[in-house]
Length: 222
Image (tube, rainbow, N blue to C red):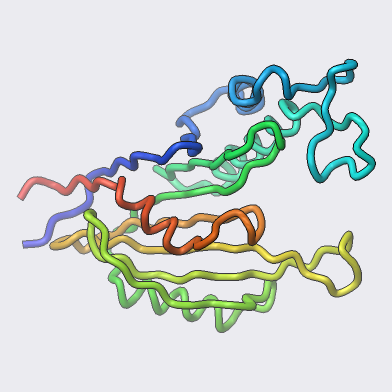
């Protein structure tokens, strides 16, 4: 007997925060969240106590207020999720050093009906093989098992051309795309994690698999 996915819950590790559903004012929520995360002694704002945001002011002069910088990045995450138009999409983001003003990674989870492990892996292979924009410069298949079920997917490096870095120079994006397949169900959960740079995780595939240890899937009653 097969059972459909009725819902899921993901317990997040420290540093990860969930984007609430149905936000009326994304920017206000992002500013409130950033203000709660950034320590008071790290805040700028154009005063004598302003601090430089790493990577934004190479001269070491007081730079952007880290609260405002972080709020803008958090809002970007929330708005990109809402712009996708995907129903029942769970979105979370990782902030390890709030005073840097950066979001380290973004995670999305969405249920997919009637998608097998082989079909999901084939879709990923086809995406990598056929895509030139952006080009996938590295792709490695990934298999694991977590309490919620078997895991299939890929660890990817994607090259995005960045004119600010020079002609023909690409910015590397590290991504893990996984499908979690609960036993005795025709449905799956698609999990995607995108890192803000290639140095965020020492071992990104393992970090994402470890994160999935907190995934609980609810199946319809037998």
